[in-house]
Image (cartoon, rainbow, N blue to C red; front, top):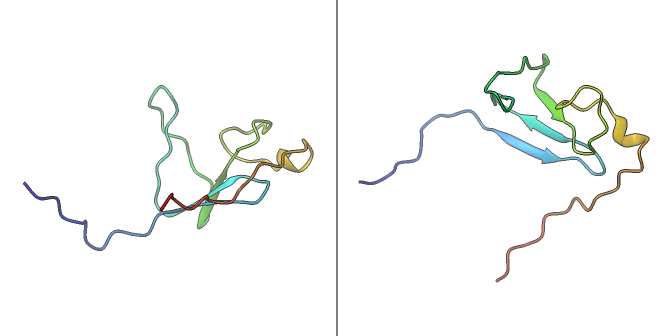
Length: 80
């Protein structure tokens, strides 16, 4: 059995913001541990907390700006 690439699917992209949240672009559904779906904010993207201090988890409320959150955010190239 061969697996084919899906055709004409919308692009889904997740960007790691420097010293900030994950920004999710595209039609991605988000569920909690019990399988309940989150209502997503209106717009072309939403942001997910990465610092752990947001009062609106799993969404970002910009708490990373005041909690001294400074992770390394660069992708490391694969070993070659």
